[in-house]
Length: 255
Image: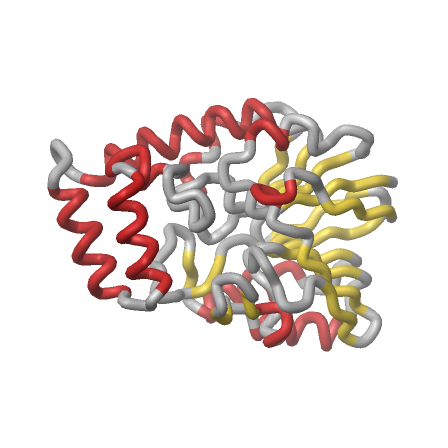
């Protein structure tokens, strides 16, 4: 059985339309929307609302880890809009989700990324789209587990969870053949982004589950330019399936 896996789609509806070509199923590990594009500052919801110059400044502050200044800067911009900020964000997110789920192949097995808004997925799902979070399913005779979202960070992205809540989802999945999650296990080489020059947050609970249950594969994304894209822990092959927005091509898993 041939399974295509994508993560960190960030608005690439054009490539998503063909991501399932030649596969028996598609797995998507989240981060569908594009809020800020660190490579092309003129793309994304923030730039659409406030222009690329303001996006330049916002990204500069966040890259320099001046998070309080970045929040104050963005608050002033949001305050310049008519009404509260969230309706503007929600309309933009909803437009992106409409385009992305229309492009999503079927069958597809999906979980959330830290940049996703889970409650907004429902109206856009089509037949053959299966959303799993802290749940398991059988694909091609193997047991797949799915754990969505990310852990708390200074970036305060929409779907960040407390460590205990995230660990409970990992525990609920239990022993599986393939563990699919958005964030990596807490291994430094898998967490360091060589372009952003920073460590992202990984999960100790996932790392513990790998050591205890030894799945065949652990598949994840989140880190766009990892120091190491794959690593073996015991018998488990840990694979960063790649930054789909940049690559436009899925990772191929044959089981």
